[in-house]
Length: 187
Image 1 (cartoon, rainbow, N blue to C red):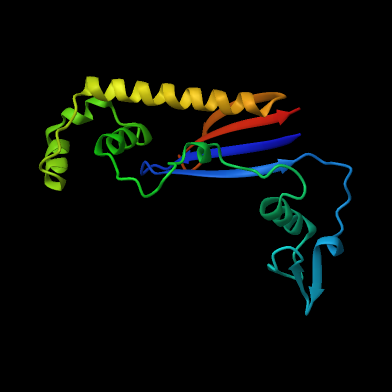
Image 2: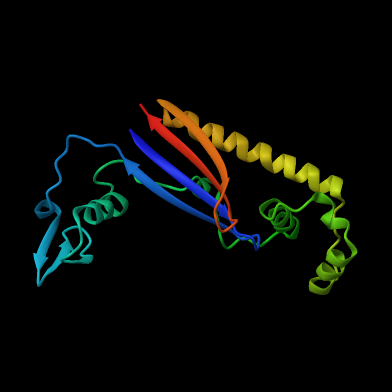
């Protein structure tokens, strides 16, 4: 069984940060550093890629390296957002797609596109851009949501086994909004 936690925090300035931690279940496999690392000059060197670690590195650090870089002790952890990366980074940016991303990722209301100051700002960047209406923006957001929902369902169906999801929201002492989504895969 593998568990993946994705933690997203939203700072007071509106910026989003995602971190991911992976916790592998304890398996009966014994971990011997000598099977995967060579000791030299108070350092440890990976037998597979040659990465050098401090001699003070613990077995957890070394095992994490083997799992993340070489997939030795279970499935490689991944961010769920990796599924939604653009297929080709070289493709030309579509201003409407970038507008949708701006509105959704920043939790801005659809009527932002009707704000005179926002329109003035966009016109200063590109005087030929025609701003869509808030109704068009809503349709595009709904369409994009349906696309990614279908993509996620398809991905999860291919995994097999069972998946358990849980989520929690809270505010830190420093008034930072935090969101934690936890997924546990078994099968």
